[in-house]
Image 1 (spheres, rainbow, N blue to C red):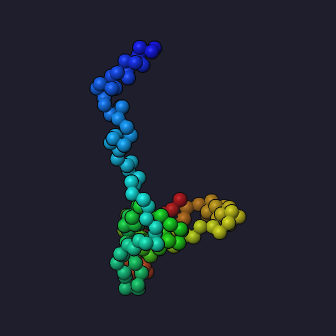
Image 2: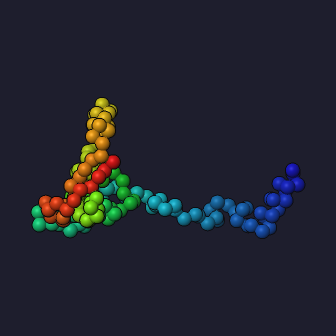
Image 3: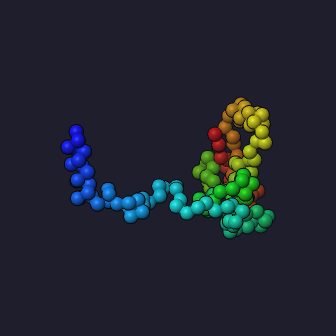
Length: 144
């Protein structure tokens, strides 16, 4: 058993120098998908330039929000456009109001339980999908 361990150590030392290199000399692995190597930015310091419709509402894709941002619910919520792009169940594309798909979190555990019970009793949530004007109905989106 000792001979096997010794042979492996010699193999590493002779053929695989990286096995014996100090950690600072070893090549660092690339970040996994979805993982960033840079520190997260505060959502308060980030602005996403969305187009504005004739009613003064921003519209665009949730994919435009940077992935390297963190912050409170309010700060993160503010990064998204008022109208978020979506595909209706009929296949038409349009926008849903962000407040309908991302409501504020519960204020306390009792409120959280009530929200969960109400959501469970309701079943699927149906959200209206609009054109970018936020008033012309295109279809519906099922959530849940």
